[in-house]
Image: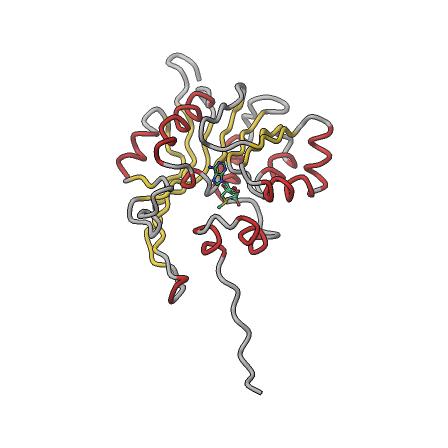
Length: 224
Ligand SMILES: C[S@@+](CC[C@H](N)C(=O)[O-])C[C@H]1O[C@@H](n2cnc3c(N)ncnc32)[C@H](O)[C@@H]1O
């Protein structure tokens, strides 16, 4: 009898490449909130926009960022197109409680033709916007920009044109100057450009070209 070594489970990005969200969330279970969200929340500290400010969490997935927002007293409009993701979000006790008392609204919707609510102070989009098909990205970004008031923030990631997935037709990848243009009305509080090969060999190898961003929309002239 030959004893094969146990196969190492594929890395989560392989599942994300195929949009296999159940496999992706199985692999990511228990992960902490994203660093860009934490940075944005810290940036608001001491200048909370209101007692229970509203955040939009785009492509919220299984809720790793939504739960942090709720724990910090934010109301959340959490959006995703995956049934599996939203099932996992609702299975979290804190999210179920927040949905029933109105602190959490869950939107089962795609990025394509998405309408965002008004009144948010933060739009968070962790590793989700690259999955918007390119033809729909300009309208999606316009909606995001409209939803963020002067003094409000964006946190999240955009993927660059040197990323290994840039050849996939259903993904949005932007060159650095295009990213800069999106944020010309913002102060970039964090702008990290990751441009490196992954440590994985073989099929799991991927080149990462990712912009990690926290940005504050410039206040209107004459206000603080
Ligand atoms: C890589 S996951 C990130 C999830 C979560 N934000 C996180 O940081 O773990 C990408 C998410 O985008 C969602 N997504 C992909 N394409 C989408 C689309 N066209 N409309 C809405 N959501 C989409 C997926 O369902 C998934 O939850």
